[in-house]
Length: 141
Ligand code: ATP
Image (cartoon, rainbow, N blue to C red; front, side):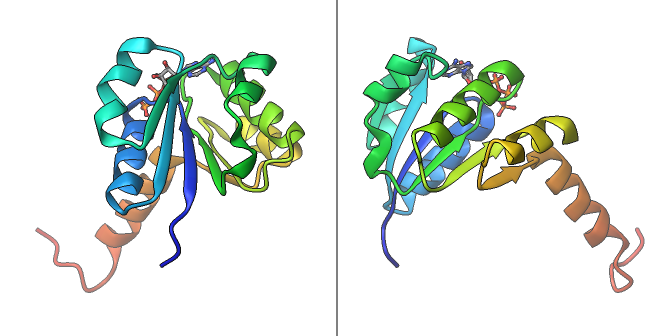
């Protein structure tokens, strides 16, 4: 497997989990969050961890992400911050931006901005669970 350089912006539950998972698979992972306490907590598990407000154009440019293969925007509740960060990344011509959306409208906006992959973690898990629970060979108990 070719190891990748991946930045994870927003280290909430989802962002932290994926950042740790990718780092444990030996990928180079940069974790970014606006909250210094969160950055400090995640820091031992990733390659680098940086405090930054990624809605600030200067701050996101200072992260020097141009060499990264993938950037994951895992900012959740703050939809405005998620959209602004994703838009700035596409403006910076990042080739592979993955963004987490809270709802379908946000997902549409992200797609319009050119985000390469939109994910809906809660919806995706619920859909997979519903499908697996109702497959015919699953015992009813
Ligand atoms: P989860 O369910 O995965 O915890 P969440 O929806 O609760 O996600 P949020 O708490 O909204 O996610 O955001 C995730 C992280 O994004 C938080 O740790 C927050 O500090 C960080 N964050 C929010 N705004 C910014 C920003 N402008 N720049 C960088 N990080 C940010």
